[in-house]
Image (cartoon, rainbow, N blue to C red; front, side):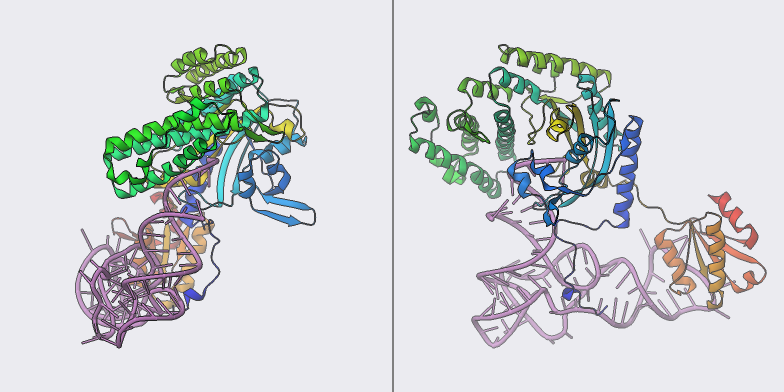
Length: 528
RNA sequence: GCCCGGGUAGCUCAGUCUGGUUAGAGCGCGGGGCUGUGGACCCCGAGGUCCCGGGUUCAAAUCCCGGCCCGGGCCCCA
C-alpha cells in the first residue's frame, strides 16, 4: 500500500495494452465466432511468424508503411514485425508450401500485427487481425462469396454495419486502355482515394456548420482550408508555362478564409463548396502537369484521362445498377473498362443471390494500399469514433507472383479485432466471463482443510469451485461470494460436518439445505 | 508532426476559474454492531510527495513557464 507507485518506471509501452480477463473473454468469444464462420466456408487456419524479412513488406508498400514499421537489425538481415498478415500468407504460398495445383486454397488467420503510429481510439501499435485469403479463383462469384463471408461474420456477432464496395479494375481498365503505366495507376488510385476523403471532409464540415457553429469547428475548418489556399497562391505565382492558363485562373485565392469567424454560415459553406472544385482542379494539375513520382521518374497523366477519373468520384450510390449504367456512359470509349463493368454487373447479381443487398457501390473507392487489382471493400460500424472501419479487403491478383511465386489470383479481407471488441462493448450486453458455480467457505479455522477436501472432490467431478483463501470470517465470506456472483456457497460448519454434512446455500433466493457430503456432487449437478 | 482534453486515495472523480487553517466524496478495503449467515442497515478505521521541475506570493492541488505521461482528433489504416 505504501509502495511508491510513481517510482515504477516499467509500464506497458505506448500503444500497447494489457488485455484483462474481461477483455480476453470477449476476444476469445469473437475469435470463436469468426473461426466458426470461416470454417463453415471451408477455410483452414494458418499461423505465420510474428516477424519477417523487412523486404517482404517493403517490396510493394508505400513510403508511409515503411516508416510505420517496427524494424530491427539481426546478423541475418533486417527484420520487421508484421504490419499486416496478407503479405506473409502470400509469401507462404509463393514459397510452395501449399499444393497450389488443387485450387482454391482457402486460408484464415488470427493474430497480432504491429504498426509504429500514433495511438488513438481503436488504433494501437499492437493490434489483432483476423482474416481470410481465397487463393485461386479469379471469377466474380469468388469475390461475392468473400464479401458475403465478411458480412455473415458481422451478423454472427450481432453487429450492424455498412458495407462499401468498389472496384479498382474499372479505373485500371480505363487507364490501361489509355496506355497508362501500371505504377502510375497505383499512384493515381491512392491519390484519388486521398482526394475522395478530403472531399468528403468538406461535406461533413458543411453539414456540421449548420448544427454547431462554434469556434472550435471554425478553427478546424480554417486549418483544413489553409494549406489549400496556400497551394492555390503558389500555383498562381509560379506561372509554369506547361500548365494551361485557364486552369490556373479558375483557382481564385480567397482571403476570406483567414477571418471565417466574421462570416455568415452560408458564406463559409459557399467557400467550402468552391474549395471542393478547387481541390479537384489542383489534383488534375498535380497528376497531369506536375507529374507523379515513380521508380521510372516523374510521369504525367494525359489531361483527358485525369478529368475522366474525377468523374468516377460521382459514381457512387446504394443503387448499384444505376452506378454501373452511369459508369458505362463515362467509360464508353474504353473496351477494357466496359468489360470490367460487365464483370461487376455479374458480381452484384451474385451478391444478390447471397443476400448481400444493402451496400454502397462506389467506383471512386480505391483504398490506400497499392496492390489491389479488382474489387475493394470496407465495412464500417457506427459509433466507433474516428476508427469506424472494422474490415477492409479486396482482390490482389499480382501479389503472389510479385513474391516470386506462381501467378495465382486471390481475394481476401481482414477484420480489426480490437475494433470489433470496442463495438461489442458499446452494446452494453456483451459476453462476460462466468463465475465458478460454487464457493466453499469454512465457518471455523479448523475446517479449512475440510474445505479444501470438498473443493477437490467437486473439481474432480468437473464442477468449478473456489475455496475461501483469505481467512475471512463467515459474514465477510458471504459478502464476498455475493459480490462475485457465485450461485452457491458451501458452508462447512463444525456440528454438521461432524455428522457428515455441509450446508449448501443458494445465493439467489437465500435458502439453504443440509446435504450429506456424498450427495453434494449430485445435488449441485441437479441444481445446474 | 499539428490541434483539443486530462494527470488529486486501490478505482471513478469533485475541489483549480475567484490561492488561505488538519485536501474531499462515492465505490472498494479492514474492523465492530451479530459465538455460525451475504444482498441498498448503522458505526469506526487504514489509505495521498494533489505527475515532475522551476517561478510568482506571507501563503500554491489552485496562478505563470518548462517538461513527462495518458486520452481524443487530423493523416493513415484494422
